[in-house]
Length: 517
Image (tube, rainbow, N blue to C red; front, side, top):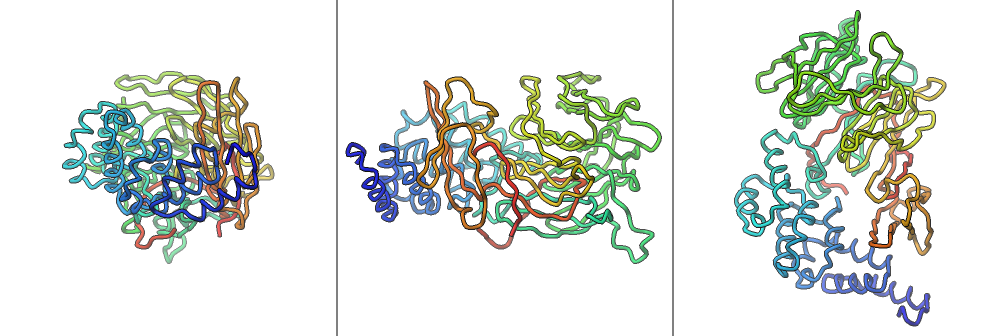
């Protein structure tokens, strides 16, 4: 077909093959599309395999699936797999079919299997005891992650702890507090599920529904963090010492031991089985103290050191309006170490750790910055226009920038979705790198592609090929992967946790905004 170079003939043949996809032919068609660079046909075949994965793995041709296609399939959240045990067994069977040749690929493929979601007994008996696994030292970090996940009560969060659509679970985030457009305090808590494009109001903030209005708490300038699949909130201007946690299974706020030092405008962090409250203001002076909460003993203690790095970015020290200072708490030491300053002086910001970096928004920056702990360097990711005083959360491998205020101090009622991958993290073209986009019969060169979203075209598939003189790589996504949600809130805090559902519903660098319907 390609030799004749008759594009209409090629399109007609590709269309016929796309309509002919079934269990016995899908992998053969995918291999044909790959060899003739028929991007749309390859995408269609991969989508078919994803939608029928539990049946395709039973076919003999499954063992002939190319490694890169298998890797792409394993990454999909919508993979047809009722349990992750089936995915693990499919991968190991594929590797064993040509063990000498494919064993070096084992760790790479297993990095896309949601190993922490395996049943603990299955993990011990079938995974850790498997000689194929034991013989591959590159897999050991993945095994350690599973152990930490279960030992810390699901305290580990990574791409492998994110449930698939078929798992009757969903990774969601909560929008807590803030104020409405009429400037009234908001006591509601909203749960957003980006994957299923749904929202749900859950239990309101504690002590906000009293018959005597004078007894209601006003939660402002508090801090929040997610830990072991529960949400902790602490402090606040009117709730200085109070600490509560939200349990999703009970849909209830539970009060825990109070802070030793009342504070607001502070931050919280969770690590190594403990929750930390850092800095803040007590109404008289700015605080440099840090407290650690032990959930097992339900107690707070003043701490002098930590077992992992904690970063403090910006703030308003010593009466200054703002600072660009970045401080790191070194493991096992009794002092803070200065790191590369953030490019702008800022305070009242919000940050989230994501894919080994720290992303910062909020305050008066009108931008999102990224800090790399490995290189101790900052980079500007994007300008946010008029959006300031916003919050940020990482969910479903995307960043969600929520609420905020515009230049007229008016409430912004949307949530921005920002996608970041290794293919799309470059703001400017790099030497010897070429970009090419493929979308519904068209191609476009260059590092960026503008996508116009609407319900009619949300299912369209886009591909981007990035190549240099030594290699090339292709990624695919649909328009619906990036959207936002209309909210009538300015957000005081955003956190992530996992919630079980009874029912089952069904990358360029850039952002997009649209209402959730």
